[in-house]
Length: 93
Image (cartoon, rainbow, N blue to C red; front, side):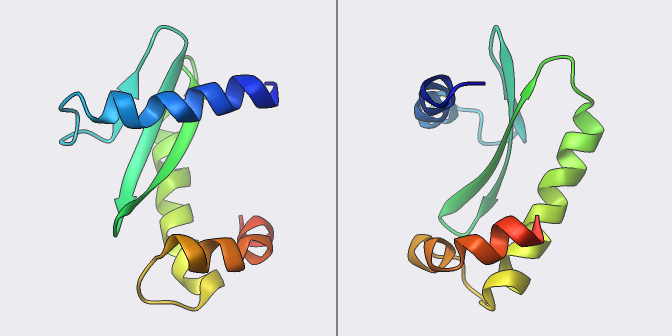
């Protein structure tokens, strides 16, 4: 998947989220499935093809939500702190 395509998918996510889907952990479009979990005022988002295993994708999000506080050494997730420890997060994932 190219960078421009990925940026377009990420840009579309907040618009899709604003359509009243806050009770669910996924949103499906024609081509992809967004799986997400809120963390404080941020979201962990996995973008997967529609034929991926949703249970495995949800487990990936759960694992990521546990890794973020451990890798960043924080109790509260902030965008600035996540950016500061981005390399630690990449290696933790």
